[in-house]
Image 1 (cartoon, one colour):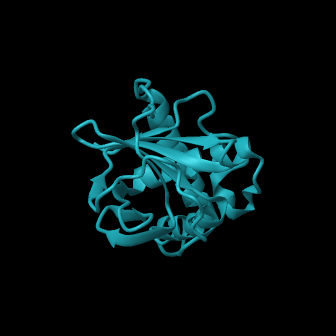
Image 2 (image 1 turned 90 degrees about the vertical axis):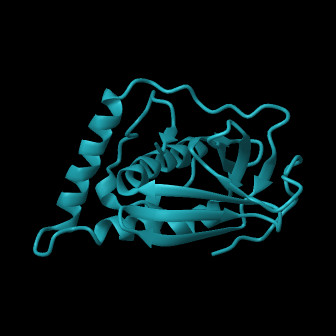
Image 3 (image 1 turned 180 degrees about the horizontal axis):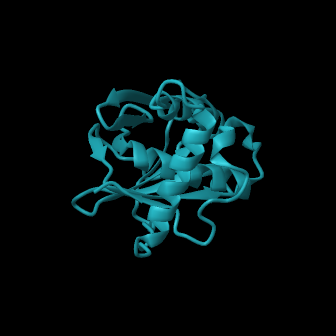
Length: 186
């Protein structure tokens, strides 16, 4: 899946290396009209990764399908998925509030043009790629994928983007309104 590359935001990494995301905070950037993942790795290094709506519209159904494949045979998928989603939301509400990852002036910024996903025993390994020098990896367990769907849905709502790309079992409400849109992977 790829999107047409546009001018990269300034400060993109200068040499090819893979950035291993440990935590990220998603936010809608109205100036760029994109979702920005402010990400940090285990060493505390940060990157701001921009995702276009066109690219997001392609990956959201893939994530939903991956989760729906976990539905036991003979049980209505929408009921199981809705109930599981609500359990994950309740567990997130019980967690202490996290400090959002903030990009500063020195934070490298780049546009993601390709996302690759590979199945893992507990979720998906996601690789975000920009130009030749920009690459980040995010291991997402199924419960993280559910949190990411809620966060992206809320970002879409804030942007005024069409929400029909999201599965109906996610529900119409903003699932984590008032919470930091952050995913901790450890």
